[in-house]
Structure formats: structure tokens, C-alpha cells
Length: 421
Length: 142
Image (cartoon, rainbow over all chains, first blue to last red; front, top):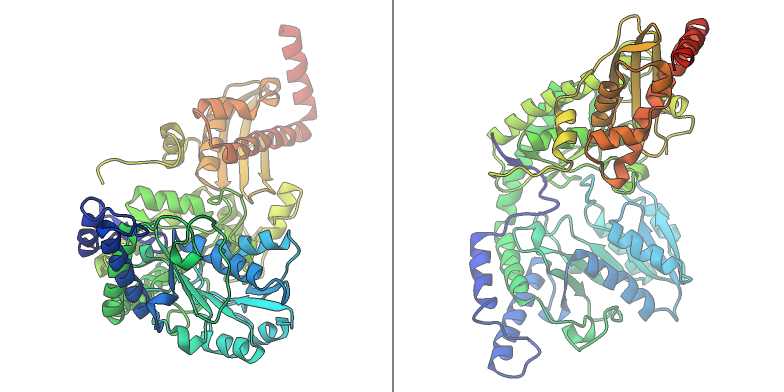
């Protein structure tokens, strides 16, 4: 069986050269960067080099603006809570886009329970932040605006230059979550005027267990993890040196290969979407069409009349690794909030699959996925009462309405006695 | 990859990959379709009933792997049962027969129970006399 990994948004394999670079820091160069002897000083140098490599990837001026955390979620927590607590006296209002990652959404919810308020700025049906709403949301009490560069679910590239301009004109610091874009799109923190930017190397062939937070010198944050004075006092705790060294090299490689990687995945993204669209009726792409508004790695698909987890499981049993934003896949039984924010019909949110491409994928892989996915869809539709009811004209399609029958949501409400969420 | 890891246990996966009794029944005596408001899954069970006993059962499910496996198992379990026995059917039987479900997926087995009961109610509504006779006959023989 062919194995096709189409979940690069969740993890990527560590590059062999990255792995080799990490190896001595587990065994030979095991020192703690806080130690003042040879063992500590050696790894301190390695830390500095990694900071420079991270800074270079995002166009930062100085390695002193780079802080290491344990992952992207921790970076987001530090950015949001750190800025909120540091600027409490100025105001207790935050502005975020409605489609941020849970690490941002839930950090904000935590602060809301402590008296902060937050405005969630809506997005277009394509997932683009509404700039006029963003501008209107910022008040004199606003201490931070958080807008991600690329959405993790639907791949929509946000208009960061305009977002940056609005924040600069209102003199409010901007935090940009680059978790879904770093290593796959050019990032220039100065062009955006970003106060903070976060990302993690495991999205671009580095190891897990390390996150990066860039913080412009002028931006104020306080620590949310307390202990020693590691990371300039902004993040206590022993640095994960092997992961930081590996992450630094992965960032350097990502910077060198950036255009090559984009040139590799962009045609595959097109081939995959066009193949699926041609082979499978009643399938739609969520978010922007492949092109300048969508990251070249991501496809977010809704296949009508079937549910996402069944698709995911059958893909997996056929060697294809994918993700899903449908409710059955989530432990909370809720659909992805991103799909809700773009106003996706519940019927389509249920049949959701996310495919994210990487360096190892080939044209032959894509053709296998198209062929296999079409078979999976037919198998599940054969089992689905919704497909049968659509064919009999009891319910209608959302993607290509025929004008016959009631909506899926109405039908679901009728048979469950309650409206679908 | 040499080993295969699965989200559910092997029984659940087997019923998901090769579901039993999938489809519809022509001239079904009772059909029940129910939805779970919690997750949005929809399940439909069709029954063929003769002399107060379930002769055949089919399902169609819009839902996750465990919903498909639950409906497959439920239709297997209820074939041959009397209406009264089937009315007393509990989702726990499905969970046990499947060798357990993850806690967040127990509601899939509840949906299977509800679909079965909706199908039985449909039968009773269509055949009040036959249903009453079957129940009476059963209570006499019991």
C-alpha cells in the first residue's frame, strides 16, 4: 500500500541534517545554558546561533528579540497574557480575529474571566479578516491586536500589511501567529510592524518541543511562567537545547529552500483540488482558491452527505493521513470554530477534511489520493441516509441546490427534535 | 509502517470497515430515523417484522466510525427478537458487544437504540392490532 502523509500542518519529519545537528546536544554537549562553566557556555553559544537563525527566517533585526518556549501554544499564551498583564494599566481590551488558533482564543477566554474584554473581528466567507471592522474595534483601551498570518484550517493568507498599518495608525501592538505559515511563506516582521510573532519548527522539518516568540524591543510583556531568569527573564525554565539547535537549523534550511518548497507544493495543491473536483460530485473547497490568497500547502474540503471522521478513518486505512474539522473528530463534538466563523452550512462542516502538503508528496501520491478518496466517498455515500434522501429529493444539496426538498439542517432538526448546532 | 494502529478497538473497526446489514429494506414494516443534536449524526433503521418477531434489520448512517459500527452491531443484535424484547433493548448491549467505545462516543450507541425504537414505534403505529396481539401472546406464553 502506498503511504501518503497529507497532514503536514500537524507535524513534519525532522530533516536528517537537523537530526544530526541535534544529536551531540543530547549526549556530549549536555550542559545547562544557565551554567557558568565550559559545559554551560558552549550551549549558550549554540542558543545564540539558533536565535540568529530564527531571527533571519522572519526578518528580525536581532537575536535578542527571539525567545524560546516549549511550542507554539506556549508562545501564544506568553504573547497574549504577557502583553495583557504588562499593559493592564493602559486598558483591558483585546482585539482578535474570529478564526484564531485555540491557543489564542482560549488564552483570551481565560483573560475574559478576569475582567478583560475582547472584540472578535469577523471574517469574509473566504476567511479574510474584515479590515473595516478591525479598525472600528480598536479603542483607546485596546492593549493588543492578534491576527494570524495564515489560518490553520482553511489556509487563508491574511492581509498583514494592511492589518499592520491599521495597528500602527492606532498605536496598538500587533501579535501575529505564524504557526501555519513559517517556513512556507516569506515573513517580514518589520514590514508588518509586528510587536510579536510566534511559530514552531516542527511545521518545517524541525523537532517538536520548541516554540519561538519574536518580541520587538518596544513591546512590553511580562512572564507567565515563573522561576529562573532564562530567556531574559521572560520565560523561566531550562531551555530544550537539542530541539532549539535543531529548530534553528530547520529555520536556516527553510529560509534557503522557501521558494523551492513553494514551487514543489503549489502545483500539487492545484492537481489535488482539480482532481477531486473533477472526480467527486458535491465537493467544495473552503477558503480561497489556490493562488495568492491561500497557502500552497493547504486544502480544506467539504464533501456533502457524509461525515468527516469516516472519511479520515478510511483514508488512514488506505495509507493516507489527513485531518478533519468536523464535530465527530473533535473531543468536544463541536465543529471547528473557523468553519463556523466563515458561515459554512452545518451540513458541509460535518463532512470536513483537511489535507496539508509537504516536500515528500509527489504527483503519483496525489493521483492515488484522488482515486482513493473518490472510492471512499462513494462507499460512505452508499451507507448514508442523507445521500439516499438527496437522490429521492427529500433533502437538497447545499453545494449545488436542485430546488427539490428541504435543507439538510432542517431535516437534521426534524429527526433529532432539536436544531443542529 | 509495519504495525497498524487504530482509533477504535478491532471489533469496532471491523464493523466500520465491513458493516453488517447496511442498506434499506423493501417493504419495511417499520422505519426509524433519528439524529443526535450533540454531534449532528443521523441514523436510520428499517425492520421487517413477522409474527411479532424481527426477521430482518438494515441501517443507514451519516456519522463517524463508531456510529456506523454501532448501527451495524445493533442490527445484528436485534434480529430474531420479539417486539417486547426489542423495546427493552439498551445501548449498553451495543457497547458491550463492540468491546467498548471511547467515552465521548457512547452517544453513538444511544443513537442506535433510539433509531431502533423509532422503527418499532413506526411499526406499532402502522400495525396497532398486530403489535397488541404479539405483546399479548408473549405475555401469555411468559
